[in-house]
Length: 346
Image 1 (spheres, rainbow, N blue to C red):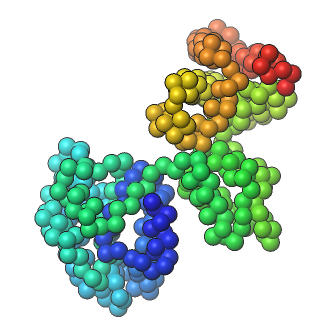
Image 2 (spheres, rainbow, N blue to C red; image 1 turned 60 degrees about the vertical axis):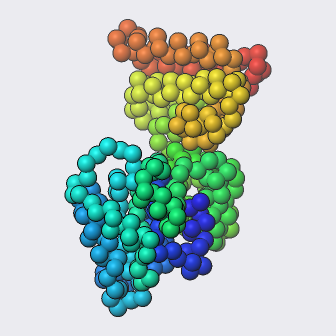
Image 3 (spheres, rainbow, N blue to C red; image 1 turned 180 degrees about the vertical axis):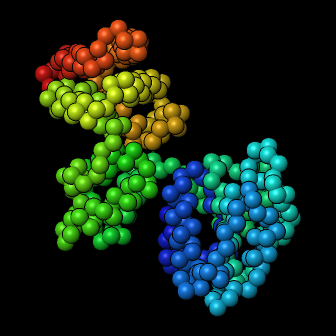
């Protein structure tokens, strides 16, 4: 796990060869940054830090650089990014790469260098000799999308590094407002930690006050108010968006996406799928699935299908100019906000 590597680096436990792979860009970049801080002194980084893009640079150059003694420092760091030859992708490498040179280096790396393969791919080709060799000799670090509890721990860790704590509700709100982007979350935690000053804990009200809410997040919050029949709050969000000149067609499309997610989540839940399995199948962050599961309980499958049909009709009427776009969306929301037998008089 990537966080275990961070802990090891902090303790000074450094491996000669790392293979970083996965689709979570922030975790990849942050791990490279932490390796750099652990390996190369700031004063000598111009001499002892090299980055090669293997879509443009020959692999031989990176290996040769790793075999070169560091200058004015104890260790050299070589980062070789985009090693497409580790994947199953059928692509002729330009330039041609001497994989045998890398294989020999991995088996017997230079004691004064740290070599990092940065592979921003979801999977590596396990059948390849080089991948097998890396699994045997290198520290394999997967930067995969975090699940709900891992994201919560990640946020707590960020706050702790700033000398702060963060309330659970505040952390959940931060995930929603940042659309589960780890890089955006990291930036906001730094900003929030500065904002609260001497106070120890980041609270929900701090997040709502300081973190900007984009259209997608506003629509997400609007739907959350609607499904819970919070009429006044839902309409306030809707009218505020209109004042901000948000296009009703765009708003309607985002509303449709959210209800589609709720319907899909309900279907998979009824088939016995768990939160993690649903997130994997729909390729959506687990935290959003968690909220969608809660929202799905408030509707029957028939009701959700009816809503999707209404949205399809509304989409046609908006795009053909048959009816006023704003009025169509407003009437749709008002209809959804009517008390139901399930929700009582919320």
